[in-house]
Length: 208
Image 1 (cartoon, rainbow, N blue to C red):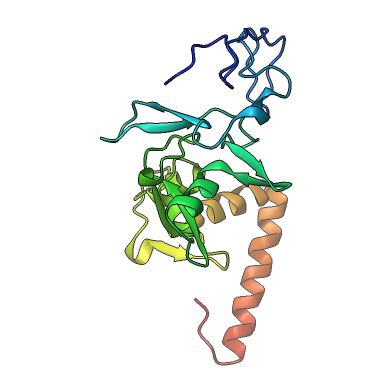
Image 2: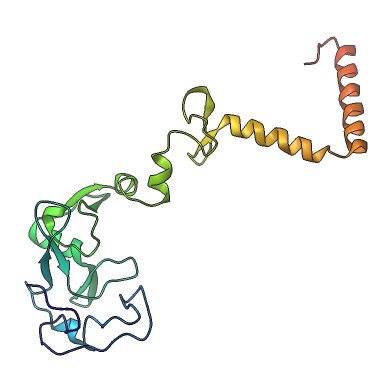
């Protein structure tokens, strides 16, 4: 059962004060009531740490009552060790998570701890399923100038990033244009290029 906003989420029924400031790491929003009275988040007992709420999946989300950590996930402390709430509950009710895998929220609700909404996946899969910059870039089929990121126009650099060859060529031409925009610099460059071509011809090569 959901406890109304403005009352301590531990279930004691006491009202909480309004937060005078916002703090994302503690889940505070300026002008909104605190979720708990001081120290009351430790009163949550097994089975009382979450409440059901409708979500995007057929089964309801189990929203964590405790305060979230910096990334927006619920946390719980047991035996002096702090765990992310959705991982702690999954390990307790489903079983171990395979090595190298992480839990993906299929409902995209960070405070949800319903084990049915969790799927063990690789870190890469978890990132690409999200809505962050990495996932957004991975979903792109064209660069920002409309060139296709595929076939001969695609280059993968040493960091694994996709590079548009046409944009690279345009950037190189623009750099040269700016570098030799001054007539004296352009004349010096042309003289150097001609001298290099003459030297190549003397060696028996046909310069391109």
